[in-house]
Image 1 (cartoon, one colour):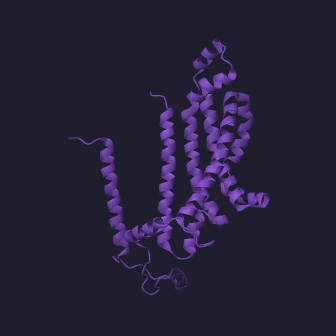
Image 2 (cartoon, one colour):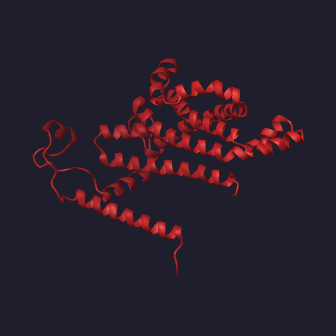
Length: 279
């Protein structure tokens, strides 16, 4: 019996994972000795400067750490001791708020730009100027004007989510087939109805591509933003665990960040597939 492409891909993925975990376990089990390190850095890391022994945890340690984190993810023992579930919820809420605000602004504005070549040319210099700016560069200005670290993080997510959605929406709207629009004009379909019944369905896959790109960028940026502003969030959790020299919890948080990012991407990928016309 011939396996499907999906089944063969899954088997190969599991094989790659097994090889990676085996190599990781061999690397941390003392198969080779690391060179001696600077005594002050070794003291900071809780390692031996003489032997260069590494305190990097292995796969079994990460599995135990993951179990400990997920066994009680919502405990709250004070400002610097909260469960990873609480920290993750703060990050997801900030990403959702900033991303949804970007949807509210970018999609209508992208529609207008896409339907008007004149406005497209007028807005293009501003988009090209602002798009390359790192979202984190806006953080000091946001903190100075807003004076709230949580809202400032949401503002940064809004900024980084805005451009992919705006550009993709404008491109999708401007790429709608001319003959469809000509038929609508011949039938004297009003502009608003034409936008909702012809342009929006045709541009929806491209718009959702922009949304998918922007949510991935937003999830990347929120981790860095929370490391800067502190307080709550998965990024702050990573930085706090590093300050506690808990490398196991840092790796556990990195793994969870990746899984949540993959879930967000797949959710929008399914929505994109649902609105894509069959070829």
